[in-house]
Length: 144
Image (cartoon, rainbow, N blue to C red):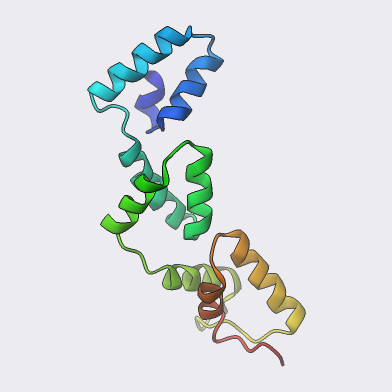
């Protein structure tokens, strides 16, 4: 109960944490089932929270999906969370680019090809696809 009182966990995370504390497997199964019955443990709710948190951190859909897989969340839960709370990933990418590379006027200054490539890699790492990156960096010229 202490683990779930701090923050939501996925079923896999809770199993791993209980196993680290040397709990017997049958006790882990019983605890997980009890938490599921009382809706204290809900992978759909966790997926929605993970999506919101990822967007606040400036992550794109691909990065959020990767993080969800690591935490044992099924893609279907994440897809449903995305359907319920539609996000414009192009605008999310644009906001991230403006925060990282923008100037005081709220635009992205022109840079040379080498710096542009660094910016593209940064946004790729954050989980955005090429179309979203192109849109996010659209005010920036590819060449000086």
